[in-house]
Image 1: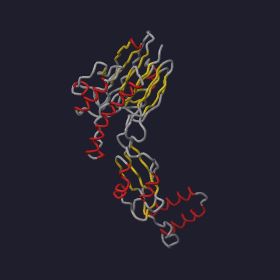
Image 2 (image 1 turned 90 degrees about the vertical axis):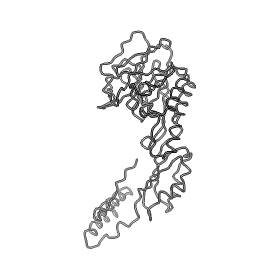
Image 3 (image 1 turned 135 degrees about the horizontal axis):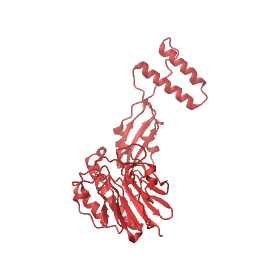
Image 4 (image 1 turned 135 degrees about the vertical axis):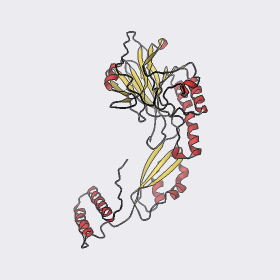
Length: 368
């Protein structure tokens, strides 16, 4: 039996609001999302895939711009392979959804029921199974499901859902995956990619979103090229135009802009960054001034100030009062500490204590 090559993508969330970017750049990003559809179609042709599986949340809501629906239908129609869409919780199937209102080309099949159904592809010796969200939430769709097939055809499923634990978004257990009779299950919903997984004899994966839309979706994003034969392999492919990144900058030199420039990687001009300023500063940094100085190096830039003003935490140590006695005990421990890490912990404890005494806020820092 020859191998099957599959393009597996999910969670495009076309027509996202991009609220943090301002109206003009948000509109630009939505237009770029439509062009992402073209790059997915182009990749399908370059890789000569046999099947494309789109596992839900292609659209961010049912309030889709006409240009987006047209771009979706046009891009999918340009693909030589059959395309299967399993609507998710954001783009669930209903009589008023774009999937019902827009005329899609003949190579596109949209699943419309929460009960798994099968489309046979005898020319590929394969069966493609799928199901759809028909509301914002869905009970488990694979409970009791198993595809008994004695033909030797590959059984593949496209479905939007969440593996493991309780969920309102088609909860799927590993036991259900193992009992499904599928050779590969193409999942969507989780925006961080899974890599290839296996339960029983069933391989499964979710590719995450193909392009980040916010600072909860940082780093390089992918779609998957899946090769399914006697075994299964997954090749992540990045087709994103932009990415979101969070960069922590520790202030060292006394010149905030110099510290930021020294920390910047190359080739950030296409990306959306949040720079978080850490450490001590003689004066509070001015985020607007930093954006003015380096903002042209990014598509969009946020600056978050998490610095603290420089102060000698030990200056009151030894005074004949509660503050002095508290600091003196910690200062003794500081002087006896054997490592920088110990000294840093003791210094932070002194800061928290002083903040409590002065009724000030001392933020607990957690490295991302």
